[in-house]
Length: 159
Image (cartoon, rainbow, N blue to C red; front, side):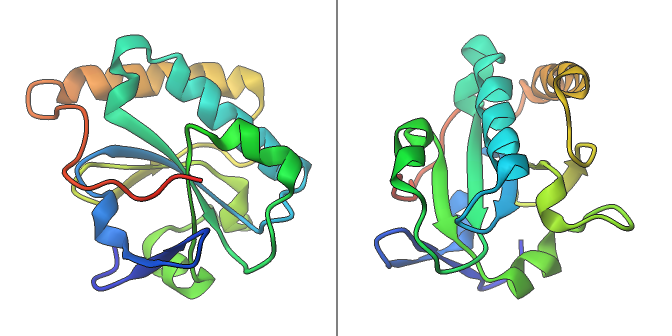
């Protein structure tokens, strides 16, 4: 995580990005208009997290909104379990990197509890690739279970 970086809650309050530390994060980045690819990523994030069963409390799904536009009201109910914050694209680009020839919004990223970006899933992931991603997340959480526990000390406000 970039040092001293901040994000903004949907109600306009600045929060230190480091408040997200202490929890595994499954992150997507996209503008508020959220096209079909963005909606697919949000759907897959929710499904991947839910598929973790009892381990799901160790992972948050995060949407970094990369602009100041309004999120469509129709999307709000589906984001109830997500952490949705606005983040400056330049700050995000210091932290996360897409594969060559891809955009930040094409991937889902996994961040460890210390704030380190450690993996990204294939660009424009489909449901078949999501099945492999789910196995990867299962293995990751199983391997880290001896040192990582669910939750963090501070919560970022959810929508």
